[in-house]
Amino acid sequence: MNDTVKMSGRMMVPVLLALLVLAGLLLLGNRDKAFDKAGRQIIDQSGEVMYLTVIGRDSAVLRTPSADFTPKQLKSARLKTLMDKMLSTVTSPQQDGVGIAAPQVGIDKRVIWVQRFDKPGEPFECYLNPHLDSLWGEITHGPEGCLSVPPMRGLVPRYSAVKVSYIHPETLEPRTETVEGYTAIIFQHECDHLEGILYIDKADTVFVSESWVQERQNFNYDRPSWWPLQNN
Ligand code: ZN
Image 1 (spheres, helix red, strand yellow):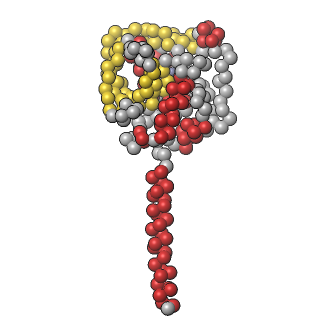
Image 2 (cartoon, helix red, strand yellow):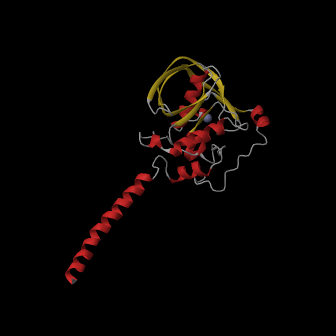
Image 3 (cartoon, rainbow, N blue to C red):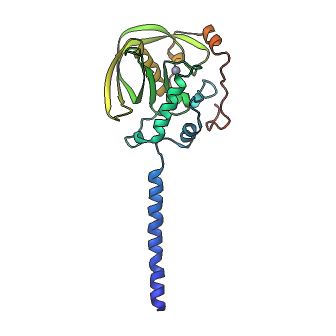
C-alpha cells in the first residue's frame, strides 16, 4: 500500500512537468509575435485616429529601418487592426494625406497605405512587406510634404515609374506591380519611410509651408500620456 502511494507520487512529478511544458507552449503559441510589446500597446490603445510621430521628438522610430512580416505574422489579427487605424489616420480631416507608413504611427514594420490616383475613384490601398524592385524613367523635382515633418514642404527628385513587390493584405499572396506618375512618387515616399529615410534627406530645398500652418493651426500634436516610446 505504502509502496503504491510512493510510486504514484513519484510518477506525478513528470506528469506535472509535462503539463507545465505543454501549457507554456500553448501560451507562447497564442502570443502575437508580429509586434513587440510597445507595438502591441500602440495598436491596442490608440483610437481610430492614431498619434503621428514627428521628426525630432520621435526620430528613433522614424529613422529605424522597418522589418518584413513573416508568413505567420501576416495572419496577426492585430495587423488588421493596425491597417484599419492607419487608414482612419491618413484619411482623417486633420491629416488629409495621400499616403502613410507604419513608422509614422510608431511601428517599425513594413505596412503602407497609398492613394491610387492612377485608378478610378482614387482609392486608398494597403501594401504589406512592400519593396521597390526597380525605379526608372524621367526624374522630376516635385513638391512634397510629410505628416511627420510639419510644417515643411520641399522639392524632391523622384523617378516617374516603379516596380513594387508586396503581399496583398487580403489574399496574403505575393504580387508585383508597375506604377507610374504621381502614384509612383507616393510609393517612393512611403517606401523611403520603411528604410528610415525622409523626403527632407533628398529634397533640393525645404521651406515652411504657409498653407500647412494655416490649415493645421488647430491640430493637436500632443503625444498620448501612455505612449510607450522614449523621446529622442
Ligand atoms: Zn511621409
